[in-house]
Image 1 (spheres, rainbow, N blue to C red):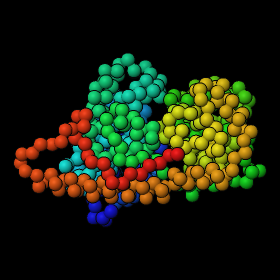
Image 2: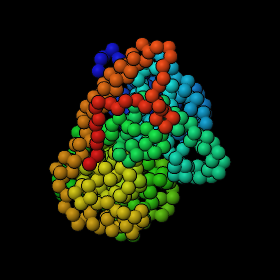
Image 3: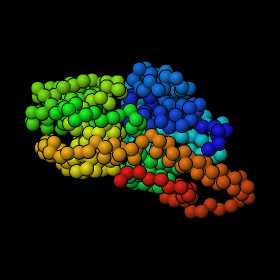
Image 4: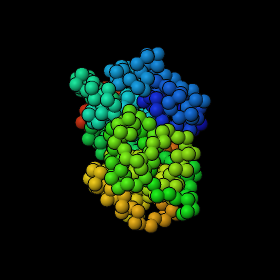
Length: 407
């Protein structure tokens, strides 16, 4: 890709330190001089990476209720926040989106590639989205009409990117169903596997581990209940609105560690018996991080876990989202001898170097194709007929490059 390519990065909001923010930082690292557009930015709540870069926020940054704790109240205004950004001077806009960032409006000459973490939860999985907090559950009856209108905007804005990249097969299926779009590639999120390493067998403990935001849909309650019933130790890393309720239902073997620095999380991965991944996730980075540390994963057999956890080889899958099913899997994983080297080799398929190579190759192909199409459009006669639109949206020809991840 030409160093003269003017690139902008767009992300939904920088108010937490989740997997989407890690992907957004990796995308920006590919173009370190690119300005970074987002709706709101909270330096204390998101990754330290973003503190030294050119961040450009929307008008929501000045609003007191756009902070992470109550930003759902500002939901009706997020479309306008992204539509006001001006990308007239850019050749490439790369959006990192699970909600609004894909809805930016770009000029015809600008190539817009969206890395989609998932179609918007507030539009398509409303109860799951609002159940993340008690406030959301209380407000749900009042927000239903607004969320229905946002669903219509979500479908419309899903037609704006020139190309979609999905983070998993799971998400590619949702993009096809909700937006009627095909993805240019499936590129799993990156993990810097060099930050993780196994320890000697005598340093591995007998405890299980959870690393997660503590919100309802993550289903950390299953891990707490299963380990309490079995009487086995569980260490929980993370914070969130469900912390109080989880503490109240916990037995004496459950320990809550709060948020920890990355190097301490890496040490916890390496010393656990296994990581518990009990929710249905779009993809999920923590299983890869744990496998890079030489430890197996016990995961619910739905969503992204099916693309990262190989049952019986890199972990154990449980089929029913119940404490009983999880408890059985915890007993099973304790009876299997896993090879740390094999676990790390599996995790290496998702390394940041693989991600970077795939992303750059795809972006170069997308830019080249977009420039060819735009050049043809500029030279077209004043009157011409378009090919029949694909389900309401003019279809871009398929890229000559297609990359995929997963098993």
